Image 1 (cartoon, helix red, strand yellow):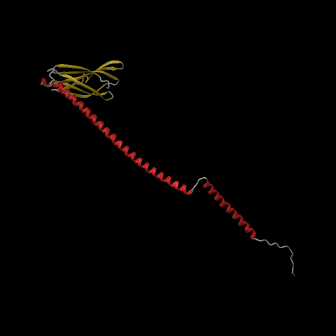
Image 2 (tube, rainbow, N blue to C red):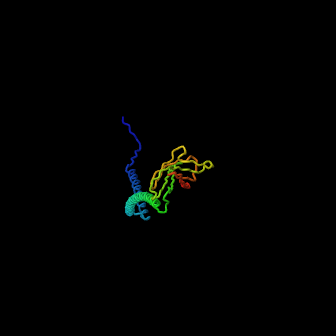
Image 3 (cartoon, helix red, strand yellow):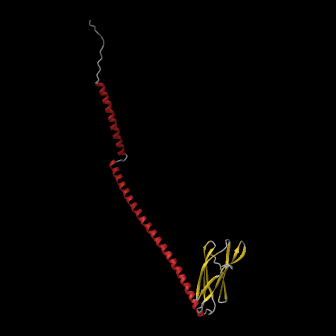
Length: 235
């Protein structure tokens, strides 16, 4: 049996859809190209030139490199200058210390010259010991270094033997105080010389004691020689 079908058949062309897609794509591409063109035109209208920008960037980089090199050179120069300054300062300190030692040595020599001048002076009494000079320097705390010079004139000829004591006067807790060094129960400091003697040593003051005066008491050849000194303010 043969059946016959009746109906309408619609045939659609696929080419028309493809054309529309291509057209839309073409329009999109044209829009992008137009946008890029407008962007570049806008940059040109605003004064932007890529080649000029690259050239300017290159010049700026060269300037940065040059300034960096100059900065490095300046840093090296500064380091050399600082090192030179440190060496100059070290040399200055060495010179200062050397001059200080020379000044102290000159002072010591001048003291010795004065001492010899006193010993050899024709106006110095022939007999007798002279208490020439006493110096006091703080060592630490209440401990002091003393240096006493005793002189006998050159014409005396004979040697001198004797003893030495100090009497320090001052205040402690608001009261006047006096004590001897060495103490009376201790042996005195021996002295023995012909023309002069430099007696040196240390003495310890009691805690809280403020010295004001120091008396030097020398007993030699049956005679007693005394001399008072003010305690130095720096001490």
